[in-house]
Length: 417
Image 1 (cartoon, rainbow, N blue to C red):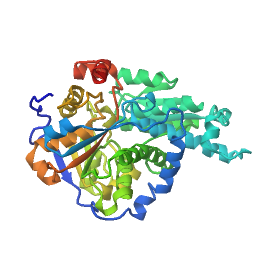
Image 2 (cartoon, rainbow, N blue to C red):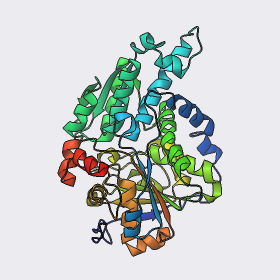
Image 3 (tube, one colour):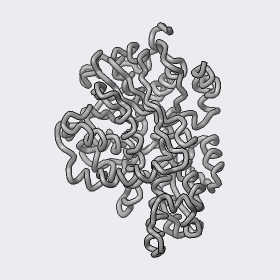
Image 4 (cartoon, one colour):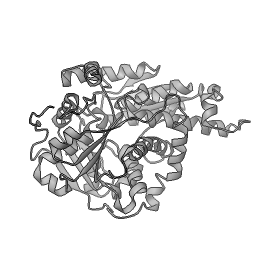
């Protein structure tokens, strides 16, 4: 067993924690929130995704060694490193939204047979799909999901990336046949460029962020993300209800999906939800402080590229304004240290491969444990049971090896022995 001291991932003063004054900790799921994410909408997403070729729940792992090291009772880690072979949970969102788009188009075109997911996979709508071009802006993983979904269902795809998206992630998107266009600015500018070009050419935007006049598809994306959260809840032992859930921020879509499922499962006894963001791209914390959706400027530069967002999704904020109990920002080195901890395996834990954005929630939990002021604010102690989502594996293998010092393949080989 590895008993070496836990490296200091977050020092006092580096992480900021904001307890949300608008959180309704013991409130019910409101009509306003239900208008965004409903159980009926989720059941539809679940039914479709469960029929996809290769679908199976990803594992929920108990990291007992790491839990002991940071002084909590349990850490449950949902490992999305191999979801549909895309190495990211994003496969559940963008590809599902494309499936729904095609089925809506098929219904409007009055097909003789009922419109359904099995018929979609049987190729019934492939001719229709071939006439559709989908477009999306991405930090990497969402664009890969959209490109994969477009190839799966027979659409064309144009994907916009911003200046700091790595070449490895660009190539991973192109591998699915998508055209990739780089915008020499930040993520939010790539969203605007994508929307403008799509309007000009008649393309369908598949975005995980919503903005005025664009809401239907982002809801589909969030409902798809909910499949991951529902799986995790179902995989928990009955006596292991989490006390805390730390989730990645970004535009807020995944966090909103988590909030919905926690409320539906546990109601007024739901776990504390903490949303974690990079310190240079904390648009959700800025929104919580302002009491309304807020935009932050700058280059939004962070190693957690999938969370490099300056504007929240308006629909996600409709959910999170009252569902996020606290918001937290972290420096990049906290995420990098967490990647190395997972690769090492603590106290008998299985070594795990996790990408920079995928560890943000866990990094938040570890950072909280190492700063007494934060532990007290979040009531994190040895009785706490923490649920986190490892939302990506080594989506850029070259960058991953530089950070961790070993290749993803080498770590996976160690885990298998």
